[in-house]
Image (cartoon, rainbow, N blue to C red; front, side):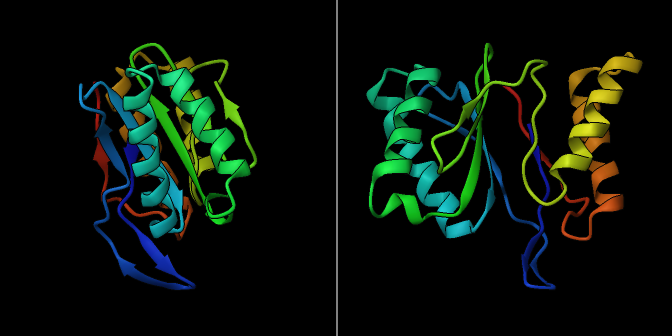
Length: 159
């Protein structure tokens, strides 16, 4: 999983080295990445970690429970962010509308440059022999070339 480091406020870059991808959970066996409002995303990330602990590191169960809370809780439902969470078996996208989406091909992206990175990653997966880390890095660098809200300061995490 990879994230760029850019934080924008309107049309201005206010930070270029943010850490949007993290290894989470007490067992350090889950990756989480976020896009959207930083404060909102960090709040959701903290809530996800608590939910993950509550459900004994069961990624799917924790994701569904967080999505339900996010959609129905008065305070949480106002949060504007997206999360991607993954373990060795599953990758899931979580949204505030209650979505828990597992991509067909294991490849998913969020954020301003997400669609560019997604297209590049899918093409690289289908037409090259690059390993997963190289695919992720190349896809993110392609997105950074196209999207003004994406930079080349990448954080890449794996489990």
